[in-house]
Image (cartoon, rainbow, N blue to C red; front, side):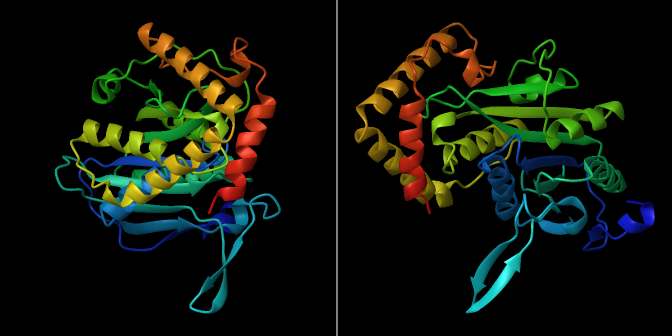
Length: 305
């Protein structure tokens, strides 16, 4: 794709505002957010702060629609196609000392480097050189405990802000999502960057877990001295708790599996090891659980909205 082909792939929706030391918070549904909880976190902030849309991407150049499919919805009796949406907003929340740029996105299938370049260039036009990315990792953790969060950052100001330790280095080698591409790209440009990776219970991956969004919102609120009104999350949380309770009540094996995860979690918490995500393949001590988890996921899938 040439520059001329891509000149209209990012559409500016309004005059560029003058922002106060803006910080961009970005979330991408996909490899590092399978169920969309981190994007829901950004959407909550967009609604809470009445954020103003400033730019959006044309979906055609960046998606294979056989992999990321558009959806059809009924609006006032009319059927309407909705395409994958990547939109940037800005907001000046009460109590905050800085302005925010909020980026809700779906991980592209195509042209990642161009997508990243266009976004970073636009953020620089807004005077932004600070990026926080939010990701979620399915892990062997129980839904009954606070979700562990790992911080990766460019400097130690971030560990003080989020009250989380920064690992000395990452030994991970392998596949990455667009979130990692953004983090490394802005670090090469010497931006200030923090990446928050929250561990989610892998056995509830087939349904939205509002506890994850709530945990990230509480962390962001504490870091930036912002108060959120969580009242509109009440129904979501109650539905989630009810479904999980029903699923575990109907399966003694699944309930026992969660108890074992709780025991491992509590041991890790006592040893101050919760900030290190544990991949599913790194938990050989757990019982053979494929059938249990398949049963639990099938139940939750059949009862989701």
